[in-house]
Image (spheres, rainbow, N blue to C red):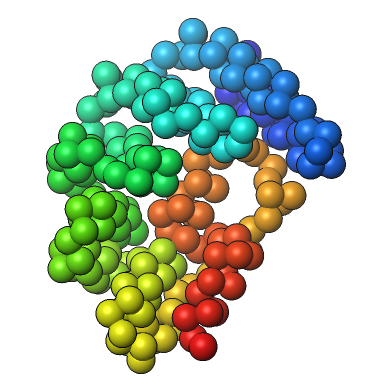
Length: 226
């Protein structure tokens, strides 16, 4: 099976899953997707996009297993130790599903280098998450501001700072960053709009850039303006 056909089948199975009523959705569609990707990787073991797709498949409900996701991403590191998207994904997975980024992953973040300001911004955001886990608000704030200095077109860095300043009682500053976050939103995302459950770009746009956002998260930013 070539890559184009693989993606077409993934999109077809994704459509079948999400068009069904919530209570009637059959995860068998996801199991078939996994089998298709595994089969493809047997012949294309160093296709990083395909391995990231496995991680994305495991990230969404009903599985959400950080250990399995880490296993998939570690396969990428065997042939590409400093892969940027695998490292950012692993950091985000640890922060989201485990509430803590390990020292090992933080070291990998420190080894990442990019001339792309958007990527540099996301690297700084991921470093900020590490310090948030350590309850180090000073360095958390420093890296969030650094993230913005690289790219002022994202949402997640502004949103995080708005929350931080709200906690510090700096309401005017919090509102300033919340407004900027809202101005940067590109898509209000719903699960019904998913066309490819394995798409790494969707993950990046939602969890690292934040420019695609769920309605509840959007409403939570508006609450910071009250």
